[in-house]
Amino acid sequence: GPADAESPASWTLPGGERGRVEVVGKVPWGAGRRLLAVIAAQVEVAVDHAALERTAQELAPLAEADRVRSALLSAVSHDLRRPLAAAVTSVSSLRSEDVEWTREDRRDLLATAHESLETLTALVTNLLDVTRLEAGVLAVANRPLALGDVIVPALDELGLGPAEVDLDLEVDGPDVLADPGLLQRVMVNLLANAVRHAGRVRI
Image 1 (spheres, rainbow, N blue to C red):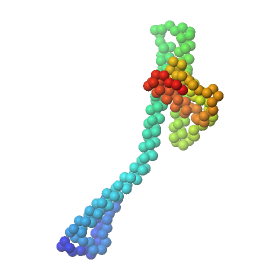
Image 2: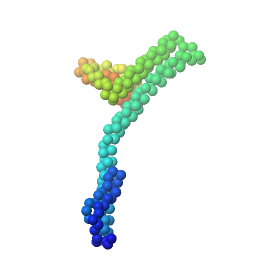
Image 3: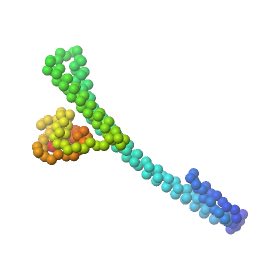
Image 4: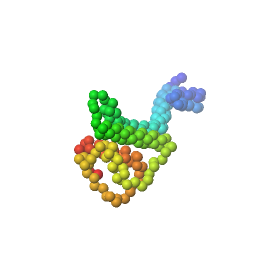
């Protein structure tokens, strides 16, 4: 019809995949119809934008959980390599037929393998506990704890002594409330990084 004419029939415009724009009553021709088409396009953009925002809000917790899981796996894999390598080296040395080990050497190698495997067992247990914690099955086992009960095993695990670490702890200092296994993992990673970058550290 002419540009200024109006049609009495209703008219439906596409509004994207999620809806449509319906014009009820007299529908304009020409510039009026083109204006309605622009409005329909804007409605489509607005609906799509709202849907994207909802999707982003739904995915944000999943992305954060994935980030935490990746960081956990990275830290745990770093922790597992050290005692695993020590245990493998000790056992491989004992199995070597090219060397005649003394009784004392064999005892030291067996002690290293034993301690390394105990450390591995504790690490895997902690990992399983953290995995169960993420699933909401297990709570953090906080209890009063002397700092020395965590720091000394961490130093032993890393093989650090007076040459690398200065200790300045109160013998009768107050206990802390913490999960022993998880706090020891924190201490091991902090000390390993500190010694790697600073050479000598003070606790």
